[in-house]
Structure formats: C-alpha cells, structure tokens
Image: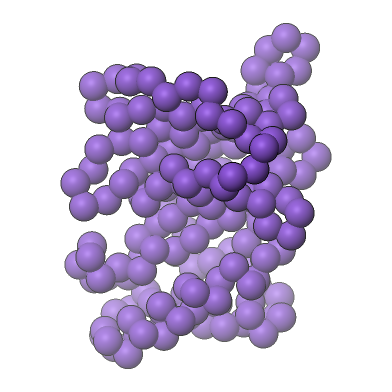
Amino acid sequence: MQLGAYRHWRVLKTIPFQEDTENVDLVNRAGDLLVVQNRPGGSWQPATVTGYVRRGGELVTTLSAFSEHGVRVRKHRGRWIVQTFQCIGNLSHADQPRWPTFYEKVGGHWQRADQRYPELFRDAYATLRFRCKQFPRDEVLPAYLNWTRKLLNGERVGSPPKEKQDV
C-alpha cells in the first residue's frame, strides 16, 4: 500500500492475518479507519480496502472495494482519496492497462469520485492510446479510451465501461 507522508494518517499495525493474506494495514484519520488486506497473487497484487467509522460505539462500514493491483491513499486537491486498480482489456495480464478507480469521503461515506478528478486520468489516457495502437483488435480498450477522452474534455460521462465491481 502506498501511503503519502501526511501526518493525519498513520499505520496503526501491520499483522499477519490469514494463510492467504500477507498483511493487514490499519490506517487512522480523524476517527476513520481503513483496513487494507494485501493478498499474494503471483504477477498481480490483489488487495481489498474496507473503510469504517465509529458511530455510537460501533464500527460502521463506509467503503468496501477490491483492487487487482494494490491500494493507494493520498491527498489530492485538499481531499483524501483512495485509489484502486483493475486490469482491463482482452490481453495478457502483463499487457493489460491498470484502470484507476477513485473514492473520496463525502457525508460520512466513501463514494466513487472518478468524475470529480478528471486530471487523475491523464496517465490512463496516454496508456490506453498506446495500448490501442499496440493491440488494435482488443474490443475493450477503445471503450475505455473514448470514456477517458470525454472525461478529459469536460463532457458528462456515466460509469466507465464494463465495470467489474460496485462499491
């Protein structure tokens, strides 16, 4: 897990969890708790991230997401965001672009925030353009490229194509 050097977040504990889970990182910020479970996966780095907040003495789930390539927690434009990654395209795993998904805390819960931060998709756009030229027969990548182009041009877009999971 990548964690920016921000004083409001800190790793509380990294512990062995289960046989199939490498570790659990507990991160705390102003009463919020993010639990990131990294699992061994060969050429990929599967992880789950679960957000909790304490309400009335109980932990309430505010986020549950899966990532095929790790979890990133960072500050962007003054707001904390959680970033996950999915592999897209009908390609070998090594050639598949890592598609980012962004979440931010709004009103006590983590919500999808892809459309609020189009600038975070510039690298994805460049990668998709390259992969579309490299693999012109792939049927999935052009849809993601088109969605990203529209987002970067300020057009209103719906959910990214071919979603693998919901929060």
